[in-house]
Length: 295
Image 1: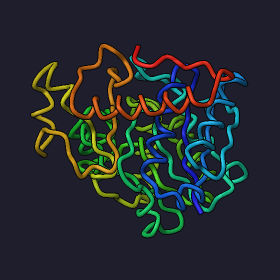
Image 2: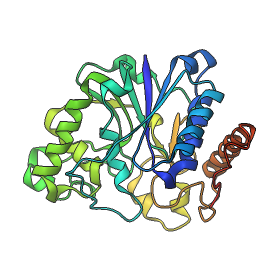
Image 3: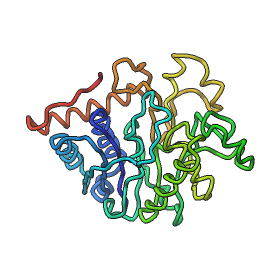
Image 4: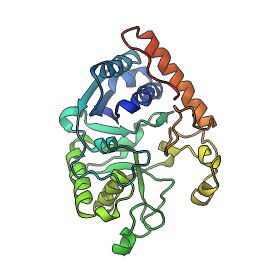
């Protein structure tokens, strides 16, 4: 019925493994068996691919595949402070590779806490399901899409969406890719947040977005409060861990698998999940050396 799509490079092998485990934990055994995992990468070695496949099988997923892809030729890294060109691979999933009617795209820097599949029930043909971005609330009211509100005044105040979790009909993937590529080619001066800005330009132009509840892509914000107060000026919700969040997204340069990341409640929960992942890896045997954990 559906596949989870994840993009990683060799630097994200450990969080990629952790994502497999948390997605498995978010589903009951029957749903896990019916679901597929689809990975894209351009630099993983054969042993790393085998480790991902073996872990997916061990935790109960019924199907796993990884393909090697290159990012769009028009890819532009306007923000490369902690993001790599791997981010553009999210638009390289194809119907022939996914082989399921639906794709749920998931970033690798997340902790899945609950079932992420319910938004597929409301998704119409041609629509992309997405969650309002907590740090970039609206066009013209945030740093994203610089100059777009001035160039197209009718877009001012329109919602801006985060690309870390997306729902789509697999048949629509080529159209989404084409729309993103056109936005990158024609409107480069409005691109700040890389492929996410390009996706939002396409969504704004076509109106093909199905808004999904905030609990499906909730940012972890306690780390930011330890570094400054700016997040209080951006967010209107209570600044604490949300127990109802179905997915916690660790946006920004500090990641929970890194030792320097502040140990907030959500980070500790992530690290417990990562520890379970590494126990699975050890149980798979000597053929799979344990990857770096907290670094």
